[in-house]
Length: 208
Image (cartoon, rainbow, N blue to C red; front, side, top):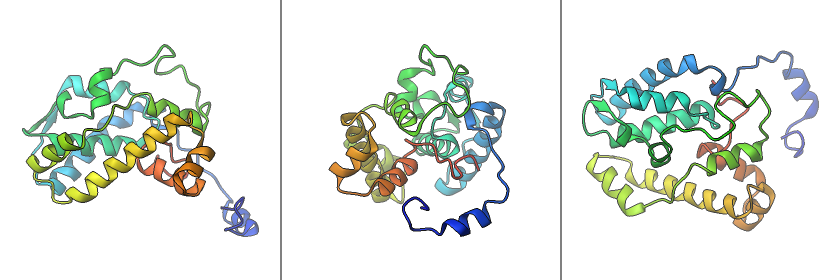
């Protein structure tokens, strides 16, 4: 915002007196079970579900994934799984499709081979896009209806919006400038939408 001239630089430096670095989620995997338990409880209440446990296979997939979108991406994945859960057990079949297809098999670089802070924003987007599969709106609509989803329209619009972002970013090789230009939105708006969709790490607070 300072660079864009929408926030006073002197005020930024006045506020920026002390910085606490919270490592990305891939560097603190010990937090994953706690986060998983927390979000299961939250979405049990939100969706009226009674999920009480998560299979070991599902936990293994969630634990070995790199989570480029950090906590917000993790939250989105658990929310998706809870919507699709039909019993009191969260299974692999409940997880988003790209998790089921990958089976938590990381690429040749390995889970822990990427140093902290070494990924640029464009690389984070590209890493996220590589794991995604095309959206089937009809199938998603049926699943949400069967799950008794009450905010169906918002969920579907968010899913379609994410698909638009995915295909556009793929087309432009994760170049945010060209993608924003073609979409007819500002780069800042694009970055916000990418963060909301879990396609871009939120350095401002995604690890909160």
